[in-house]
Length: 163
Image 1 (cartoon, rainbow, N blue to C red):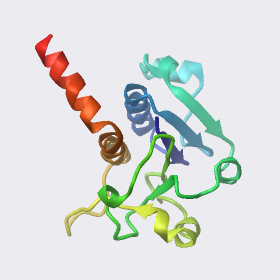
Image 2 (image 1 turned 30 degrees about the vertical axis):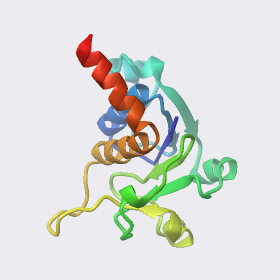
Image 3 (image 1 turned 45 degrees about the horizontal axis):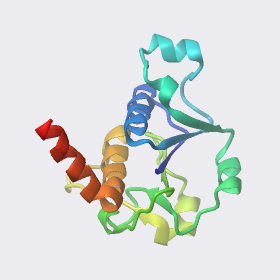
Image 4 (image 1 turned 30 degrees about the horizontal axis):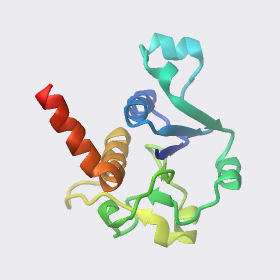
């Protein structure tokens, strides 16, 4: 499916929501350290994340380590408020990597300026500055799903309604 990459996430509830979304999508969640919270078994259980055991999770020690293993290319999308290209104009394919920055600072400006063609954004009103990270991931991930499996999803939904 898809690869959701959170670079230095700070808020555990956002990451928990995104983990749940990834389980439901069949997506892999990549967390790039440093993290703003503990993801040990004890901490996860205390947060009530009973689905966490089903999550396909990869933890990276740094953005450098992640980029060494997965260099930015045509199957990489960088979510940011610093571009004019809407996410729905991007072409997503199974296996793509969709990177999101931390809640406080987003993705590094150097990374964005080095790959402007890979940057995507969620259009917002003039009074809005940004959206919650888990909401943003949901919007982009489900667009990627729609682009690749839209007719299959509709068929499954219709079968579910009948049965």
